[in-house]
Image 1 (cartoon, rainbow, N blue to C red):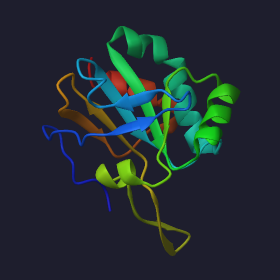
Image 2 (image 1 turned 180 degrees about the vertical axis):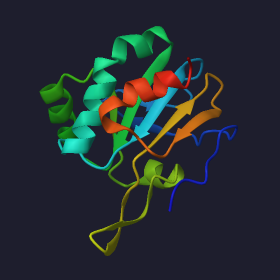
Image 3 (image 1 turned 60 degrees about the horizontal axis):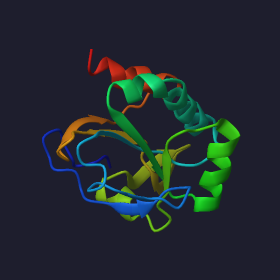
Image 4 (image 1 turned 90 degrees about the horizontal axis):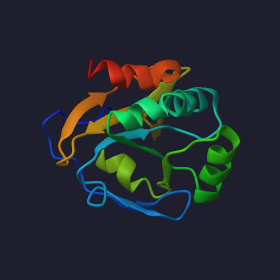
Amino acid sequence: MATKLNPGDKAPDFSSKDQKGEEISLEKLKGKKIILYFYPKDNTPGCTAEACSLRDGYDRLLEAGFVVVGVSPDSEKSHVNFAAKHNLPFHLIADTEMEMLKQYGAWGEKKMYGKTYEGVIRTTFVISENGTIEHVIPKVDTKNHAEQIMALYN
């Protein structure tokens, strides 16, 4: 099941630590556009492609006024290694309790190879400076994600 959040909705509040131990919250990021992307697992092919696309487009995203925040259920230690290995310049939140994932509707039933299971539903939210959801991207192009986001503003 995909998220029930839509453009125009107020983004659910969050507050958590990133891979550097820095407190990241919706409140602290107010006044900036936020790319909040939920992904299943560090160092897997699709998630690495997505993170590297955002890394490669990072300067353009910054120039456009965006802050990038990735969220997965991996541990803080896993995020530290993932960020170092792929030179990721943005925040990665360890949502080990899956609170943010559930809040944003990025956790739910998935099907693979005929089996049904619970897991992360890859979704990106673009949140405005005032905390309103501007865009929901349920079909993420992992290899070209930065371009996919920028295309929404061209």
